[in-house]
Image (cartoon, rainbow, N blue to C red; front, top):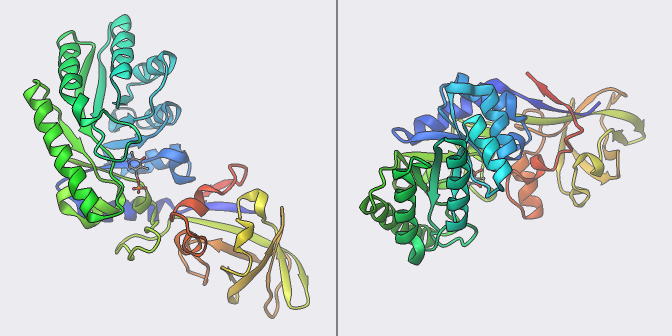
Length: 344
Ligand SMILES: *Cc1c(COP(=O)(O)O)cnc(C)c1O
């Protein structure tokens, strides 16, 4: 049996390390992608138990799941632009909405007004990534419109936010200058946001001036350092992908996990697997099984570790990512939802 073993104690230690690092800024733990494959319910609950007061979900369904677990213990922020039905679901659950375009602001205001409620929103300025967010030239009118909707009690602007590339310091600095101007313009329009948030893991950890009031951190809370980036002291991967030996042949063994379970077939020859005898080379990946170098006394049922914290010589999600040129969390996010999550 293969499993993704989730160490909630390690997750909580990571959260403590990140919180200590970013204080006095507050920490929003990002739980998108089913909490980076850890399972949103267990992670939302563990984060709230650790005293985390903000959770960030990309889609509304994930936000609603997080809110159902945490209730009043945490505020939940979802930033995907959605239709009226999903806006209503978010309002019903008390999920706060990221709003990055004028049409969406109207839609949110309309749904809230029709329900006799006030939508709590965080307005997004486009600081250069051009993914979503209001362009600088359109921002003053957008902020004024939000202030008008606030006066009607259709919305309450709780935050101003943006997302940065974290690719070069120069670009990030330019983004931060635009962000500061947008916050000033929002205040001039009469808005009184409680929180400004800009940074994800890397900027939050490495660049104090990006922390503002709140940072949105996913990867580092799960112990996933950036590909080609330094170790992050006090954090350790909290997810470990394990499987077991299904057959022993001469100098190789077969294990019960393959590409259909989420192991990249291009990793053959390029990563180590943790075994009872230490690190062994991954030789071949098939659909539901893989071959690794054997060891003396290997037996059917022995546990092997595909990636984890490195305790048994295995790769980490990030070292695997580095071997194939992707982001640190990608190997973890690839793990099939059919692989059971086991909490320890
Ligand atoms: C994914 C995401 C984050 C967290 O990014 P990490 O690098 O995993 O910390 C923060 N903000 C937004 C908008 C995101 O999409």
